[in-house]
Image (cartoon, rainbow, N blue to C red; front, side):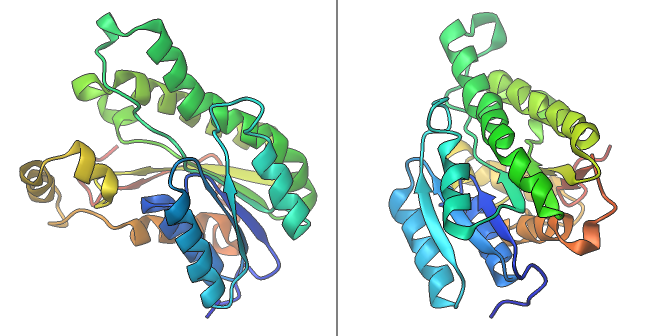
Length: 253
């Protein structure tokens, strides 16, 4: 049942069909928010998220769009506001490494696609959302950054890491431009046990990550969602322009 801390607020979570995005959408709903669950390809998974939220008494809709398409990206904000009458919370979670390439060999097409998918798409959604977030009086944005921003894009993840680095700078810029009406923050998850690592990490490497982490384990999507909930709630109302590490102490800044 909703805990009520976000009652009356509406949230849009991009890339919310699976993994961290799904956990964030469910956490926001449990706190009482109406939630727009965006997906691109994970349609059946996103439908399951929406059905689960509704089964628990929450309000949710599914929105499908390719955010790398400049015409489609703004529509998810418009549909959210049309459904819920407002937008108070924006979580820019969607992103993808697409494919790996060393920078010295990176084709310009992959470079541009990585920037569009992981940075420009978030800008397009955010630009459309800003007027609604401002009028909310409780507007909050959280951008999901990658740990590779801190460590560098190893094993061909450079284009992805660089795009996410731009998202971090965008966070800090928006934190200045939109305050005090809207707060903008970022999270930097470490190794979180989601489907992403089933694709990109071997079981042996996942165990190595656990061994390298002072807490002795990898994180969960629900733990990331808890941090996001804190940032967008009244408990985090004096936090603006921050980057919160969620990595169990594996990397320290």
